[in-house]
Image (cartoon, rainbow, N blue to C red; front, side):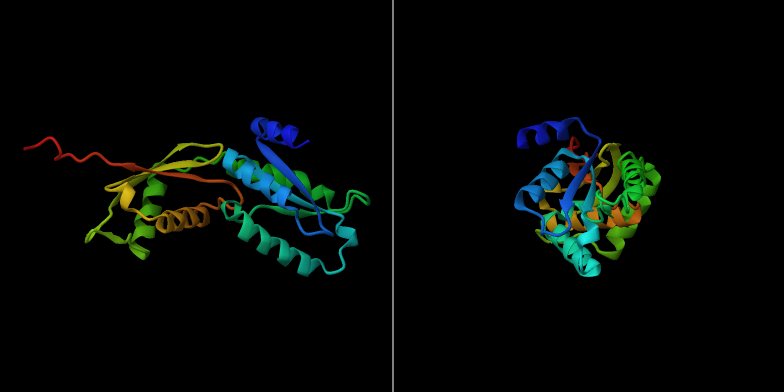
Length: 197
C-alpha cells in the first residue's frame, strides 16, 4: 500500500491526507506528508472521526503544532474536520481542495514580486559575508504547480539557509500561499563588468 501511495503522489495535483483524529499522526503518515511536499503536490489534511473527539480545541492545537514541527514546508495547510460515519463536516472538503488547488496554480506578476523583494530586504537586510553584503537583484516566478521562484543574487553560495527560509515565509505571507509547497531557487546574476579588463 505504501508503494501504491507513493505512485499515486506522482500523478496527483491535490493530495488529501486522511488522519484519525482520535490518535496522534503516525510516523508513516508524516513521512507521506513530507514526500508530497518534496513532490510539490497541493495538500489537504482531513481529521476523520471528529465526532469521537472529546477535546476538539486541544486536538486541533496539537495537530497544528505537530504539523509545524514535522512539516514546516507546508505551513498553513488546510485542516478539515469531519466524520465519515455521520457525514458531518464532509461538505467542507471540496471547497478546501479547490482553494488549495487555486493557490497551487497561482501566477504572481514579476513587478509585484520585486516590490515584495524590496520590502523584504529593507525590513530584514541580508547578512554580511566576507565583509560584503549579499545583493538580491530581482526575483521572478519560473513556473506554477507548485509556485516556483528564482531570485538572482550576487553571491548565492554566501546567502545562509536561514535567510532563504525567511524569504520563503515572507513570500508565503505576502501572496497568501499558505499550505502549498514553494520552490525558491537562488541564481547567480550576471556581472556586466566581468569581461572588462
